[in-house]
Image 1 (cartoon, rainbow, N blue to C red):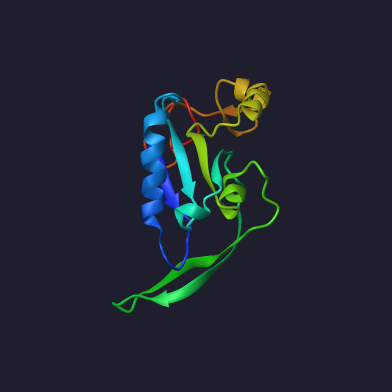
Image 2 (image 1 turned 90 degrees about the vertical axis):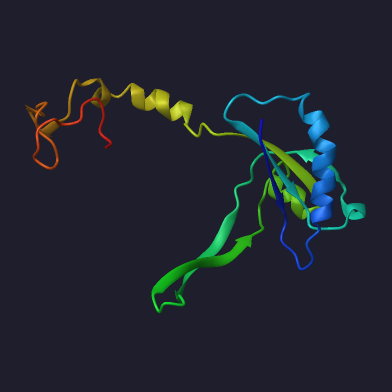
Length: 162
């Protein structure tokens, strides 16, 4: 069982509010156990406790960002690029965690770590490309078991990724 807790950004940080919300959630968390490789993602508005409107079970929002890379120089004189920008808070679903927090609700989103698109998996599994026993270098020529990208013997078998 795991939880991730985030406090929304702001000038003054209301960590006490986040701590209070978590202390209230932990005893009830046992009543809604998650499957393996899942967690509760809890987002807390950065406002005093009196301004929290409630708690919502939410889905993960699709948040867009206005991002750009800023060229910087580290203390040793080396150039690096820092990803910066800001979130675009428009068109979020009313069921989303982003919408909830922007409206002073605590959001609790159950998150699973299997990001596989099972519908697409079924479609791609039906393709004849995956039904062939091996991949060809060129049409009509099968890869041998002793050929690898680097030319050494003992090529990987059973997949395309290395």
